[in-house]
Image 1 (cartoon, one colour):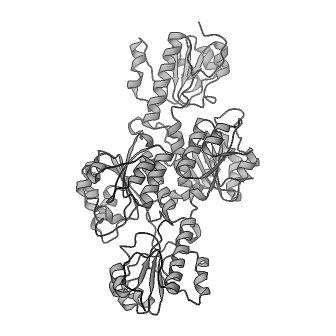
Image 2 (image 1 turned 180 degrees about the horizontal axis):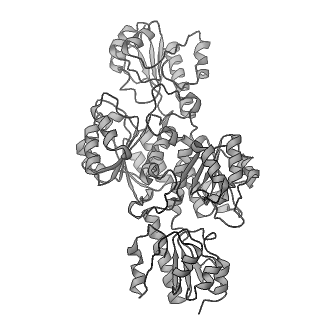
Image 3 (image 1 turned 60 degrees about the vertical axis):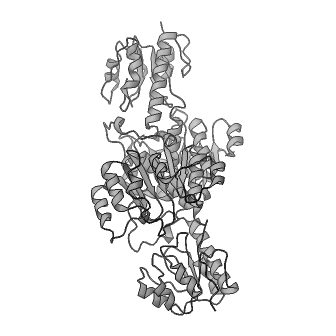
Length: 320
Length: 320
């Protein structure tokens, strides 16, 4: 298993079944990961490494990859796993409360400009020109209405009484009815939201989904909150949006990597208008506990019964 | 009128009645304030100065003090105003949404340890020992169940699904029933709350109400959130609570003044465990707008009809 921050007591049931748990140090290159998986029957993916087709082909004894979290697409080549008969599971729902609470936290922080206000007001401070707007007076648009998006909408509607609209590949009449939210096509949602929240998994389809066509429709001074993976927002389009004032503040949980040329430019030119945390939205004790417990259960199910309810692939037949 | 951050357009209706609006620079000493009030018929209190008995006695023409906000007790000597027949009004409800949203924002910030996490995770960061708890897994206690306390409870219950208890001088069966919250005596509330929220006005009765008897009952590592006035929490008791680990983090909106000896010691010894903003909870454009509009209306009512529905004193007879 990979990744830090996992309570080893949760892995005891695996040891009880005669399995040995190895925890390699991160970060893992493709070669290092392939070496670590030699002889492994199960792989609990809790880190940032990529289980590519090449890695999986070399893992001759592997039966299951249990991904810790929901958005596995960027980390596990499920098509390759399917071809090899390796089960891939994820942990839907386990971190929904944590991610939604974190996202709402950053929405209210960005909306109030809290980071600017930490530390006492300087004497003579004149607030008149920069009074923030009340959250209840803001229109919030949510892109993605899976479990996380829905829980975010629920907190905003039921708790704060905010007007919420959403865009999703699939319309969600149940959420519309239960929460009193309305569906809008993506570009209309961008145009009608003071705060635009991105909550979709990273896939080939969603990468750079928030591009200049979306950002250029945002109303002057809007806030972009992306607590999903960074790559869903095009860094070049974000740069232009910040420069032109469409985006007054951008929130990220995890930021573009060193390989992204615009990442440094964004940090250099807009240090006060980026609110960045280190991919910690799901990092609560309770969410981590639920995720690991669920992943361990999935591993046990695949090893014992050959399959698990949380498999995400479409492998034609179990391995062996 | 005093204080910054007020949209002057809202004062136009006063000018329309033949009144002249003066805006003295702050801060105002007792003597400066007395001089500014010479000849004034109305005084919109939007600053931090104190309208003492001495100041009010000198203001021979004054008919109304309109306090911008709710907790006037520390700023206007209402007993003296009553004796002089001067009306004192406040603006209940105008900032409730702003104050409650701000307070919940700081609750989630403190609970997640957000300030520590702003900026990207350093490589190799091991989160295991310091994973925050989910808000929904925390017991929140609210001291004070006026309009603000009630709205905080509502957001926490309906939005985040948190267990909420409260203490209030007067029990609130309607809030208990509507929101599903439970009443506890103050010391029991302190003992049973992971997050203790202070939301009472500052009065002679509430000053240092959160003393060592309260703080010493708090469970190890609890969070104290005081978005009411600082003096409600005894600074010495807070110091001891932080030192002994009862309090892991203390949130203030506005902090003790220079005259408070412990203020410097708190800042020096616990810089990372104080989350302080500059008395900005009610500072949203919408709340300020509503407060000023309400205060202007109160001034007009007293000047025209001799009284207003938002008077807080018990003056036996209108002046003149």
